[in-house]
Amino acid sequence: MQFEWDDNKAKSNLKKHDISFQEATTTFSDTMGLTFDDSDHSVGELRLLTFGRTKTDKLLVVSHTELEEGKIRLISARPMTKQEQRIYQDG
Image (tube, rainbow, N blue to C red; front, side):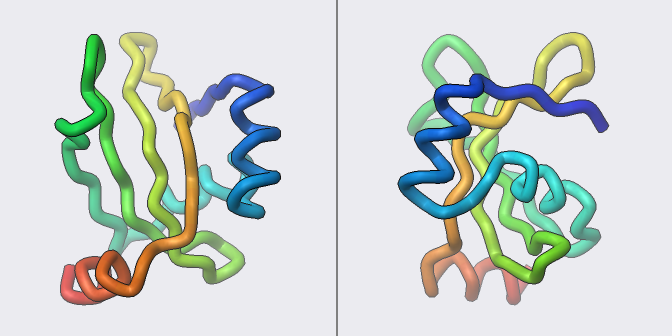
């Protein structure tokens, strides 16, 4: 899997959520991960939300879009809320 992101957005995300986009990419290796359409934020492009566990055992929500070249463009990453954790665990 190939990933890309805006460097300024990555810095902002790290400062706001203490989650690097590099770490967030590891949620896509989670075999129990869940991906949903993010229709509330899909203006001009289909945005997706992935719930997953990182290699450092953090539970994250990663907002992203899939590009035609097969790349995944990360938009944001943050820790899951308690409700999101229940959804993830119920899978």
